[in-house]
Length: 501
View 1 (tube, rainbow, N blue to C red):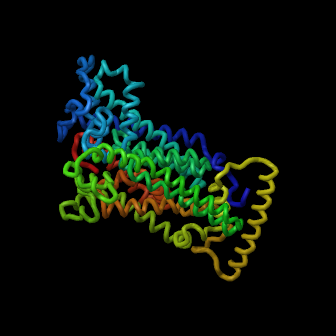
View 2: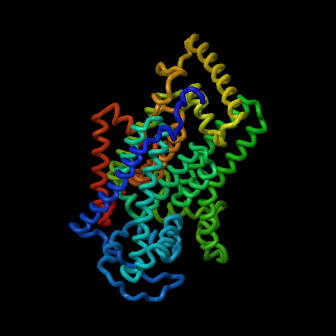
View 3: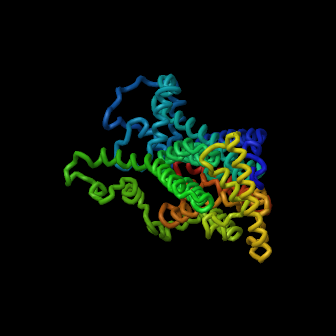
């Protein structure tokens, strides 16, 4: 095994740490549940329209008999606020109106399936809409718990430090957007399939990773950005095949397979746009068509975001929106600081997109980004001998460079252990690039207050926060204060139909 990768991810995983993460995730969900019930009991909701449930337009269902426990059903339905109304309605009646297509179908589909199977016997007791809401709560909270476990496993692979991975995962359990992970929102499913997909990618289970990352694009539109991880993998594999192994056809095949995997991740979102076009545009006269139907590229999602929610470049830059910018400033500041710290620590990595990584990092990337799992055979032993000889050649060249004064930035050497790199590892670069793009989009294009939950599923934020908590105790304390303050504020405002993010 190459030097610097002395322990496999499975060896680094700590069962007691995973148990702590599981307990923290479950405990945090109970805290959110108790807070939500408490605030709803003490305060009157700003909007009392949550219980309204008109008949479906397309296929009205026959009236059901009154439930046996209407008060319990009503209590469950009272938590259906803000976007939860759309998700529950879509699960019940389908995509009735144009603006409904802003909400992707994975969560409504899960709600529908659970309401027709696991929780179907509860319909006579609490009512059908309450069963839909209960299904949504269970799906989202269970998905969150699994996300925390996958984040710990991914963090161990990236950081090579189980303690730092534990700290980052526990912080995720109490992240400032926690209320949305306990509500009927798509954040939990998106986070599960994004983080889980990255874990399987770095575990060399590429087919599973493609499936999971594609499903993230069925949960939220920004799931398509996860194609960048396969792009990063293919880029480095192709470089290794073409320049190091001198196998041009292998490099071409790697690029083609990488492109196909990226396309697979785009397919769910594109197919949903095609579904919307089929329902809203086909079979209609030119006068009946909506404006987006006549566009050269008829993207329903972009039109809905712009027309119904006023999303667009700099369209939110108004003085009256200053409080919302202040509300989003902590998460945006954390994102910007994490990017600046990484760029200053590893400028050569950022400039070269990881191609100027240290020898140990390149060796680890060659192992982890390999498309096949290792097998113990004569071929494997020969490969290990070849890798060892190639490693020695790299080390010899590196020692010559060091002797000529071409040492790595900030006194690092090619023999520096990967465990010490942690957050500044080359493996973090694709996560940094993604969070940078998302932070810029949230600030310049979206409703900026959404940034808190939009960025909350980005693993690199928790890795950076974990680093701060270890090295700067006061700033670490401030991060915890920020998280708990937003948990209290979010559960108070969101649960009672007041605007939060």
